[in-house]
Amino acid sequence: MIDNIKFYINDKDRFEHNLETHQNIPMNAKYDVYTGEALNYPKSGKLHNLDIRLTQERASVLGSLHKFNNLWVYNDNHNYNDFNACEIDCVNDFICDSLDIDPRETKITNLEFGFNILVDEDIKDILDRTIMYNFENHTRKETFRGQGYFKQFCKTDYSIKVYDKSKQYKVNQNILRIELKITRARLLNNLGIYCLADLNKTSYKSLFKAFLERFDKLLIVDTLRMINEKHKSNKDLLIDGTNPHFWIDLRNRGTRNVNAHQKAKFKKLLNDNYSLITHNKIKNSLIAKFNELMNDNCTNSLQQVA
Image 1: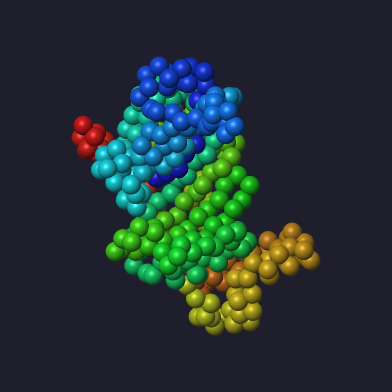
Image 2: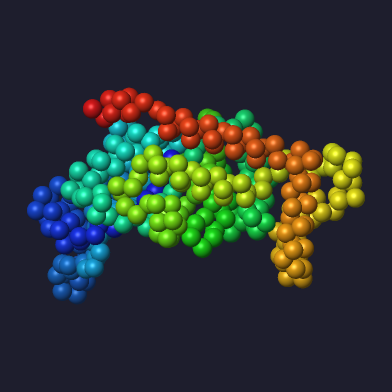
């Protein structure tokens, strides 16, 4: 569920002192290219895959908790498998113990919350049919040198990313990854998440609710073929409505009420013409996966790292 995270340690001086005293994590510093003298800052180090960064003012830790778990437990650097609530708790505790930090004395500013789900369709085809988010076009669409590609829809406080996780790691399964990347602390705070101590099953439920609300704004269509003949007169809207520029133009020249009416009409056309089957199928898989990851036996997770 939780992947990349970035958090700050409130007491930077104490944290830095502990790193220097225990010397269990080697820290690197830069040098003056002219004098050869070591500069005090910035400093950097690693705890498995997590980056530890120190500046004169701040101390931060960032990286993938999911990959951290796989490196710690399986010595395998990937994140295409499941990562359940109990494993997140174990990783959180281990990181805090290893770095000697109080989880309450941290501040989370960035967090990724997402799921890997198996699908029976070609993922590239699903991505091609993922055409809008909240009636707006994708912000980024990139390929990975033949390893699949992703679509990302960026907003002020977050982004939604949809991509082929199986091709990224050359896995012989169709693994679709959908994630909510939160990039502003204020959205996390609205969900009751301020620090590492707030990562628990209650906050996972809040995150999933926020995740689903945004997933529902993704438009993943099956077909634009008119099936219900009673809507034949609205065929132009069914086709034009899949073009983000149509909604931009409507917003510029129409009133808010006209815009809202056309969006509601367009959504009804999609539902009546079986154009949201894939979207609903993926949503059901996401709900099932979340319930599975929340209900996994914690004892089994603890035995894995014992």
